Each structure stands twice: as C-alpha cells, then as structure tokens.
Length: 264
Ligand code: COA
Image 1 (cartoon, rainbow, N blue to C red):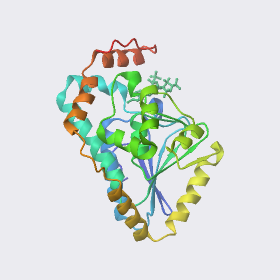
Image 2 (cartoon, rainbow, N blue to C red; image 1 turned 120 degrees about the vertical axis):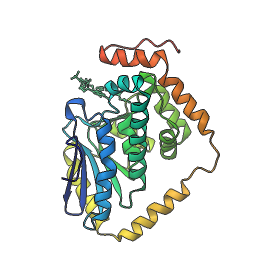
Image 3 (cartoon, helix red, strand yellow; image 1 turned 180 degrees about the vertical axis):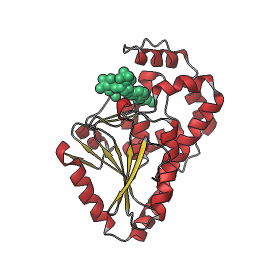
Image 4 (tube, rainbow, N blue to C red; image 1 turned 60 degrees about the horizontal axis):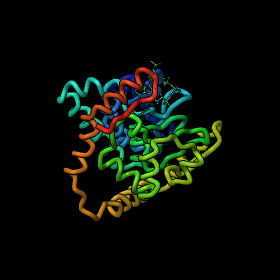
C-alpha cells in the first residue's frame, strides 16, 4: 500500500514498522526501485505515531540482502545517467535510513553482503543468527565501497578489523561478526523473529523523544573530525568501477567461476 514497488513490502504490526526486501529469487539483491522505495516507506513510518521502531528484513530463509544487483552493473556501465541515478537512489536511501527519527533494526537471517551490509550498517542495531553470513565481497568483484560505507565499517569495528573485512572479502559467521563489533545480538536461528519482536517492544515502551535525542547526539559525536580528501576517495572507487578487473569480476560471477584478476 505505501510501497511503490512489490520488491519492497511495508507492514505495520503493533509498534513495529516492518520493511521487507522482497526479491528472494536473487537472494534479495537490491535494484534501483528497491533503493528508491526506502525513503518513501520511512516517510510514512516517521509520520505514523503508532510506529515506534522500524525493522528491516529479507524475504525467504536464505538472505537479508545479497548485495547490489550485480547484473545491473552492466547497465550502469553503459549509461552514465543510469549510474548516476542508481548512486543517488542508494545514497539517498542510506542517508534517510541513518537519520530516521525512529530506531532502525536490521534483522539478519542468512546473507548480508556488499550493499546488504551497507543497509545493515546504516541501521542503529543489527540482530542476526549464528548461521548468518556477513561480508563485503567488493574485492572479489573488483569494486570498492566509497567513503561513506567505509566510514561506517570503521566506526563500528576500527581500522584493523575494517582492513581484515575489506582485504579478505570473506564471509563471517554470526559469532565472528559479533566479536568484530558488527552485530549487537546473535540468537539461535529459530528465535530470531521472536527475540527481535520482544527487544523492539522493549524499546517501543521507552520515551520516543529520549531515543530520538540519544540517536541525534550519538550521530553528532560520530561525525568525523579529520578532513578526508573526498575527491581522492571518489577517484579510488571510480578507478575500480572503470577497471578490466571489475568486468572480469562480473563475468566470473555470471559464469559461476573464480575470477582471474590482473590489477588493471
Ligand atoms: N546480484 C544479482 N544476482 C544475485 C546476487 C547479486 N548480488 N546474489 C545472488 N544472485 C542470484 C544468483 O545469480 C542466482 O541466480 P540464478 O539462480 O539465476 O543463477 C540466485 O541469486 C541464487 O544465488 P546462488 O549464487 O545460486 O546461491 P548460493 O547459495 O550458491 O550463493 C551467495 C549465495 C550469496 C554466496 C552468492 O549468490 C553470491 O556470491 N552472490 C553475490 C554476492 C556479492 O558479491 N554481493 C556484492 C554485490 S555488490
């Protein structure tokens, strides 16, 4: 009803506004319409006083979100306009998520990879199961997170672990991800939804303005004090986007084989 695409479901149940990434045949890989739907749903939830907490989840049993839709990268490469509008949609969605006045919780079952990790990292908290698989496989494809995404990883886990996550590009299970600081809670698989519901109900009973104030103050205190060279960061990410290796990464994914990277 309030979602502009069937690939994103919005449902209010008691104090919880649910957002479901609904692209299960691709393990909920994110397409442009899905990014664009996030601000629309959040606007609705922010203006509905019955919604006290927003919970994001993936449809099906296998994944929260498997990342940006890799097939879509081909289209993006051939059109600067598509690439720019996809990036705008994504940036806008992540910003809205980060600054949502209400608490946002990523309820992670299965894979949270790449762009899926970005969504989870822009939520206030992450609850997952022991069998969840979290990671940033950008280096397996030949691309890179940009400044905002890497800042989020850094804020949560610090530089040593951020390097480990990005350089190895491997998937971490629930226990590893929690030890790294990526997850707030890890619960047995069968208890994910019941635990999340009761934890959110606990928050929903607290004063919304207190939570809003804490969230705002934490966000202010987390603002980076150093002056990052934004142009250099953009150029580094673009270098990957334009590389032969990224073409090889996409091709290898499509052909279900290991990529052979050349460093160019
Ligand atoms: N983009 C587009 N399609 C994706 C996708 C993505 N990010 N992730 C999975 N899919 C598709 C697969 O191509 C496959 O489609 P097919 O049935 O038409 O072949 C389907 O979803 C199921 O995935 P599959 O790879 O068969 O499942 P699996 O259980 O063997 O492996 C993953 C699961 C998540 C490990 C694997 O799909 C994967 O590595 N995905 C890409 C993850 C990634 O690099 N994300 C970052 C992108 S920025």
